[in-house]
Image 1 (cartoon, rainbow, N blue to C red):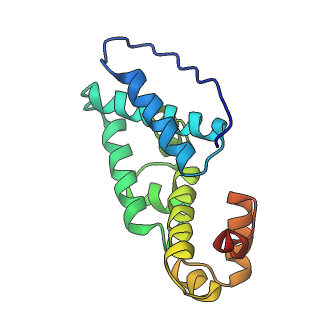
Image 2 (cartoon, rainbow, N blue to C red):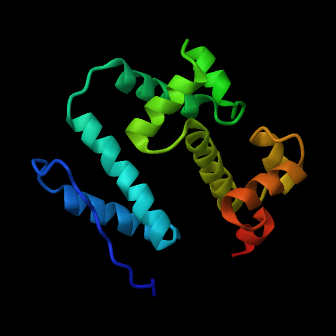
Length: 165
């Protein structure tokens, strides 16, 4: 049974029909995925912000840059976790990329990259029988120790404990 939590959402734009329902659904999904109520609310708010930006038909450089960044993260997250790599590929400064990602998603680019990587590592831990060493190399870590350190920082437990749970 999930703990009871009060959800509060302040919407500046009341013209988007069903936005509160989308928010509540997003919170439910993140809670189901094992996030704490606070994490679920933060992720749901970031999701809603991104939806609002897409729905507002923004055609500016920031929106284009954010979409390009997200596509690149999907392509390179296994081999490149450095924000400077992505900024260089898009011919912008790392600082500008950070401003754009924070404005659109509420997160810095490094957090977006790391979250994408950790989700895939979690999937590998759940769905495969690969050793920790194999998973470490597959996701760009030079050793199992670095994978364990990263995983513990992101999820508060070593990957071996996560796999058993």
